[in-house]
Length: 91
Image 1 (cartoon, rainbow, N blue to C red):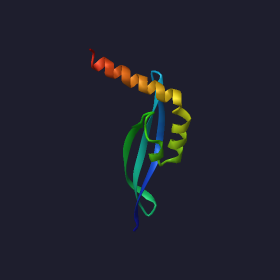
Image 2 (image 1 turned 180 degrees about the vertical axis):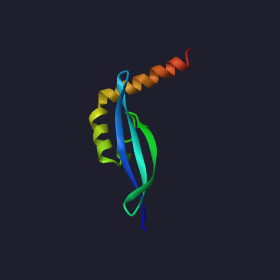
Image 3 (image 1 turned 120 degrees about the horizontal axis):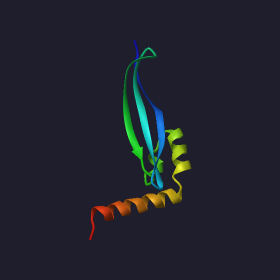
Image 4 (image 1 turned 135 degrees about the horizontal axis):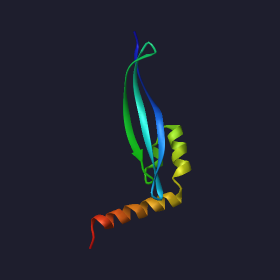
């Protein structure tokens, strides 16, 4: 009886928010006994345009990030953040 743990990215969704994008990632953590799944759980996280590209380990997610997060999208995200900050802290 051999137990192993396997983590796979089973979903990555690109979501448009006004003029920028986010990538929502879901990882499936599997516990396998002799190659058969006996338990699983999910872990989710969101990648914003300002995320550190070098820290992305999954090649599919990395390719999606490169394709979607252009300089224009990053600039739009920064403008979005500044507008939200101004909205929260009116002078």
